[in-house]
Length: 130
Image 1 (cartoon, one colour):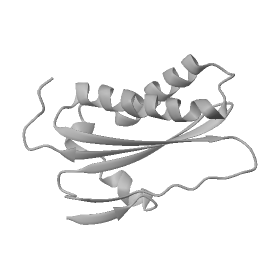
Image 2 (cartoon, helix red, strand yellow):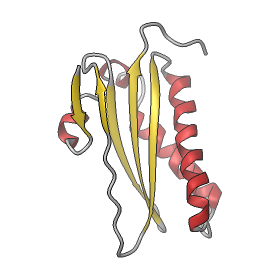
Image 3 (cartoon, one colour):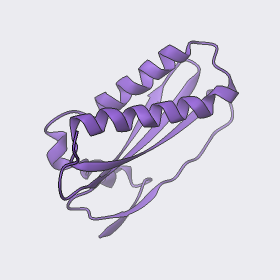
Image 4 (cartoon, helix red, strand yellow):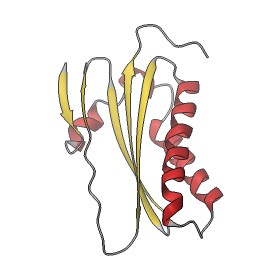
């Protein structure tokens, strides 16, 4: 197994669920879930809504990806940052088998917020039942 830091984006992008990526586009699926959740929340969502929104996004991505490719267990981490002068930092580190597992980082810009999503997939030896 190999330890990969999320900051090593170039290396991480090379490990993007090789076999599964041929079946569908992970980034497109994730962006659709994020944009749908943000659109549903509307323009006036408040800071107190961010926790529910990030949970909704993470759960939505897991549901969509599990339905499309059941050979992975998915962990999704969502960070929502309001646009402005403040910054936020987030790191993610995983211990995995680089021959079977993968991780991607997706950044989505919205008029009010920036959303950063990390998707980690750990390959299951047998596909999960749908």
